[in-house]
Length: 324
Image (cartoon, rainbow, N blue to C red; front, side, top):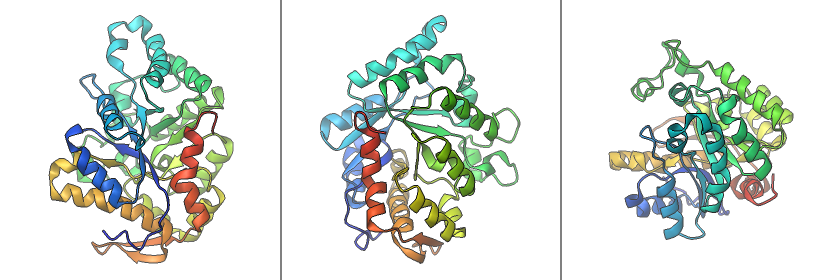
């Protein structure tokens, strides 16, 4: 990918997964090529009860000043004492910050994970967590829902099925149910500092996305791609550009860069290089452009001042003490 024609601006990638400490140099090379000065390493729990937290701490130790860390909740201690699980999880908020984490990453709203941890997001297990996050003003990157086609057996891509993301058999929570749980959380805790990952999966519903941001002034969306997201923007470029201009202080740059695809060798590296190029091109290029594989997109041509906010200032505001 050619990044040389893109803007020379400070960039913080608000959504990066660092899972393999042995691939530190590869991740640094990806960030450098994309012009990213700092990254927010978002951690998630593993099915075996471990988390990505140790890998993120390793990165921060080896590269001081280069990373923010958003921790995963650690469920193993809570599962050993089910009667105290809510209290134990909430107690981790202060502990994680003391260990060097700057925020929290929650993937508990992804349908696959929500079925594995069958507790409503607005239910008793997490009630004290939300209260602690609001009180301590700890920022959260929150994955809620998934693309609509994952619930449609005719439209769900084969790669999504292989990843366990076909939700069409009726055993997974509905997308609207997850959104209703989030609405309940935000009514109870209106000061929560949440960045909803992947544009809250509302890229095809810009009017609804606008109503959501208007209703909840402390939340943001990140730009980590989901399947079809930038095609949604390309289908309505004028509406998308107007949205980005109107909500320029509520949008945070993110790519979903990840060390796991690097396990696939050169194909994985090409894909990880393509994502930041695509996101930046969609923000910066004015009008139609073509990806190296021939796919057509439509850039928003955002002004430099707006790019400054999306690329770093909005993240810095949210993650600085007292910001929001």
